[in-house]
Every structure is written in C-alpha cells, then in structure tokens.
Length: 327
Image 1 (cartoon, one colour):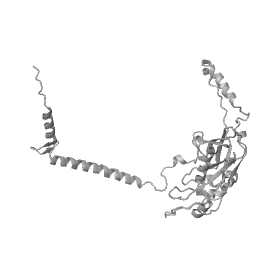
Image 2 (image 1 turned 90 degrees about the vertical axis):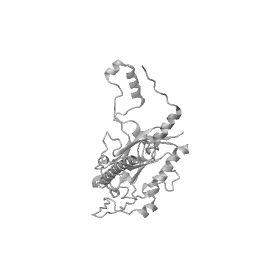
Image 3 (image 1 turned 60 degrees about the vertical axis):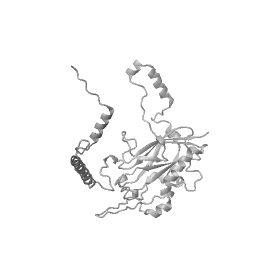
Image 4 (image 1 turned 90 degrees about the horizontal axis):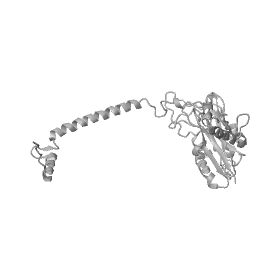
C-alpha cells in the first residue's frame, strides 16, 4: 500500500523557510546558534589569516633574492637583436612619393623617436665621454646611482638627423633614412673591446629547389609544373643571389661606416641608466629601384655577437623590406 506524502501548502512552505532563517524558540539563525557561528567565523579568520601570512612571507623571502635594478636571469639575452625605425608592421617600409600621407606617418614617428637625441637635451643630461673605450661605472661596494650616460647627439646622424631637412629624412624625395638600433642587454660589453660597425646588403637568399621530392612528382605531376613556374618567376644569378642587391643601389651610413663606439657600453638597466640613449646607425638609401620590393638585411659586425644563428633571425641582425613607389 502506497502512502502518499501530504502536500504542503504555499503558506506552510513560507513558514518553514522563515523558521529556518530565524527560529525564535531556539534562537538559531539558519540552523546554527550564535556561538556556533562565532566559532566557524573564528576558524576561517585564523585559517585564511595564516594562509595570507605564509604567502606574504614567501613573497618577502623571494624578493630578498631579486635586485631592483638587474634581472636575476639573463641567459636568454646573451645576443642582442637589431631593430629598425620607423617601426612598421611586418618591418615593411613602403613610401609613395606622390602620396604625402604614405610617408608622413614615418616622419612623425622619427621626429618623436629622435627627440631625446637633440644636442641640447644630450648636453643637459649626459656626459662627453672618451671614445674607443667602455664607460664603466662600478659600484665598489657603494650603490652608484644613477649611472651617467654618454652623449649621442642627433647631429651625428648627418643627413638623416632631420634637422632643418626639407626632404623629411629623404622620404619626400625617394631617398629614405632607416635607423638601426641594437636592443639593450644589461652589463653586456659589446664588441669585446674591439671596434664594431653595422653593414647592410641586399638580402642574400640560399638557393633551395622549389621541386618536391620525386615520389610526390609521381603522385602529382601538376606539382612539377607549378614548381617550374615558381622557379621562373624570379631570375637567380649564378652566384646564388637574387636581384635585391642590384635593386638596393647605393647608400650612405651615419656615423661613417656605420660605426658604433664602445663608450655606449655597458648598459646598466633602466633604473640605473635613467637617461641612457642607445647609439644609432642611420642608413640613407640613395637610388633604390622604384616600384620594386627590395629585401634588405643589416647586421652588426662585432667580435662577441653571433649573426649566423638560423634559429634566431634577429640575433645581431634585422631584415626588412623597402619599396619606393613612383608614378
């Protein structure tokens, strides 16, 4: 025999809920007395207080092993990379001489980028250093802060300084200036006490056969025809270079020969070297073949900077594309 459970009315459900929230007979709030609630709150207060204290202690101990000025681990920054200015998407510098807007954005970026290099600012904030040697500023047991930096004046960039330049860094005449800078690595003695410079060339490309393996050709003969068309699209010289070297034309570099002096090293970090300005090399391209995309590669020649690491395309070098459009 099935006994049906008595169905409660809506009023009874409300009354039971009210009694659960507050029972006036037992003085219980949500099923617990005030003493019980006090013990529970005290337990969680002590528990979470202990966790907070333990976390704070471990963070404090860890921070005692970390310097405010120098990263603890720098093993992945052994080789500095190169970068260009103006900074563009995909490192493509495209200039349309007849379209002012196409190159004016580059000019505005360069004006802002070179502002800290103004001679007046450099003279006010930085030192005149002796060329040809490192500008070391050891602490010798006492914190030497802030570190002084050597002057790199904007006028050292010659025709690419943009000072009184009606050609706007050459962008309005199809002779643009591209600036090469080396990324900062703390306590890195670039050059290993030897002279160093930046060189730029039409990017050399290793010859790689566009043809797929023989089994693939047997399975799909159309791939052979496609690969042959790819091979014939761009002529390759006998020395293994493409036409980029010829299309690049001539250029001049500032400072002369793309030299980077030792006096701008070592770099001690952003907090130590508050007024540090990186040395620059400006490359002014004089007669780039118009309406042709040119691949350019610039690399630094220094005794202790490797530039042939195929796993890191930016180690000691930078590759970018340059195109000058003329109508």
